[in-house]
Length: 343
Image (cartoon, rainbow, N blue to C red):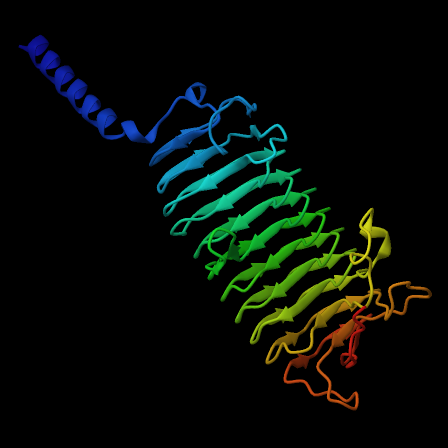
């Protein structure tokens, strides 16, 4: 009887195990089955070796993650091998995740699209031909991610080139780094309620952080160093907030590298609000050593840390922006209020 009971128990456990494995079948995949051009459906996946794409591989992307797909790169690298048009990893649908690895040598490194609510974490995205990371959907999270040595921007939040519509709102970037990118470190291009928090921009070819349109965006507790242009600029847009940031040594011609006119500095500052941007809040920021100039050929470049370009016809401040408790070299300071030179 005991033997029979044990056999019955074993059969039941085998049946339960089979049911569980069947139900979880969509949640596991063998990494060796991955190939460039694959689309991963809902489930959990782990990469156990580097994935390198070749021109003969199918697809316009190294990997596509559909809604609910959760990919752990497991410390490995996805390499697009400098294919002129191959995207790295594309997140589609809703609630896809990718983490813990490197994406390199792609046209764009990571593209976050679809219905949003995706999560990207612990990635290094580097050497993209164009953008490191593109966000063109809503309610996404990017955490502990670095975007470096990309041809254009490190992080681009904004407009989908396919339909030219602003669709990137309510995204959160936390503890992210943009370094040595050809243009901007971080660009918010017309979105609403995006937040960049505790992040840093170093040695980028244009601005460290740029808000180019959009409302109620926030850059907080972040740092901008050694940009060719402004450390942080609000070029267009209203009701945006710059809070408790550290901005130093921007407007640096040495960072412009091989860029020619118009990428050389003309008239920049540590923190700059361009003419026409209104009702923005700049509070508790610290600045030091930022340079600006008012002509293309900058000689004896003056230091310019805080700048509001909203002035009336006689050169007096005519700004609705609020500058509160900002500091230059540790001392409280108000912004310069002048018309920027446009060549």
